[in-house]
Amino acid sequence: SQVAAEQFALIESPLLLAAAIISICVFAPLMEEMTYRGVLHGARRNRLSRIPTSAVGSAILAAAHLTGLETEVGRYWLVAAISMLQIFLFALVLGWLREKDGNIGRAFFAHGAWNAINLIAILSLPYLEV
Image (cartoon, rainbow, N blue to C red; front, side, top):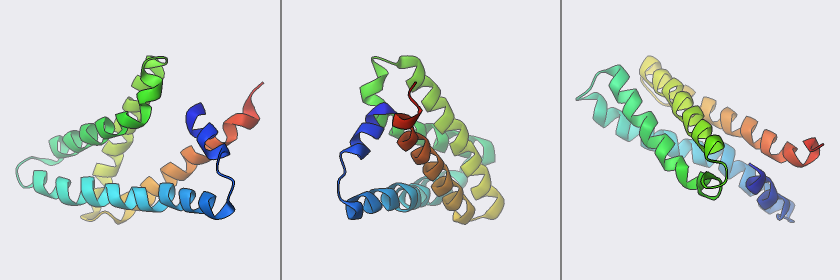
């Protein structure tokens, strides 16, 4: 989003910028995968089948990311809704990877790559304006 691009533009220190990028592309995906696909997925999977387990986890993850969209929900509700759907659908893919592999390894790497791609897109916004 434009807000995220503006926040990154405020970072003057290369060290802080590197720390922010590592946090977004490594630490956040690791913590989210350990939480959503590790602990919560495993706990739900004991009671639910594969699809409901992934759907519930995906909905929870999408809702958790709504806090990051709070500044845009009022002004750009359609963008926020599409973002929530995008997160939900991607989380379903991550749940499928977790089910297929029996661990969070590939889900973690896919999540990190997803965040990196989105970060590149966000950081490119100022250069794409016409």
